[in-house]
Length: 169
Image 1: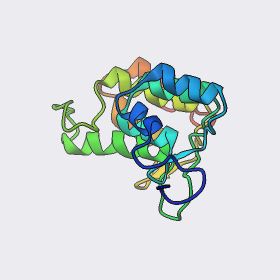
Image 2: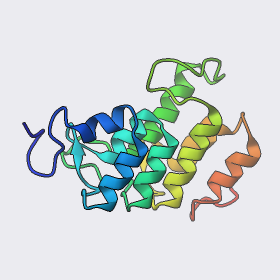
Image 3: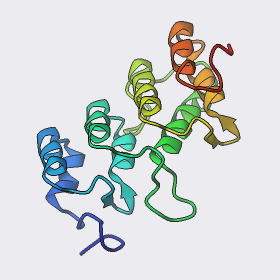
Image 4: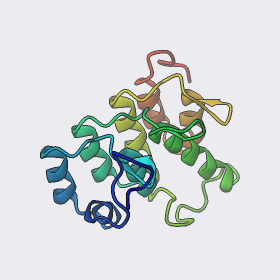
């Protein structure tokens, strides 16, 4: 059975399992041998599935094959992978009351601040839309909210990747 039509990965396909467990070599090989980078898993792009897992290596493999951080896969209310990452770092900030006291709340919470910053960085390096607004927060505001108290130098590095907000701390 296909999930949502042509271009989707069949429910319970081995490729879908490869994302869950993650089988990096299998995924990389599949993409090298013709699997479409815009293939959907459960109606979401491969990069969205990788963003949910917060697996930097998997995200990196997909970007190496041309994944688009701004591709939602369809649907008016569907978040892009980039919007999901911005929402995630914002929710983490708000969940901990701005103090970032707990870093392991649930399977979908990012594993560490450094991993979180690396993920934001690779998205920005791969043409994530710098004008995206999520929950009424710009990309720059989201970065400051998530990282400024943790590491000002890293925050400046991330902001430096934004053509509009360079050196606006």
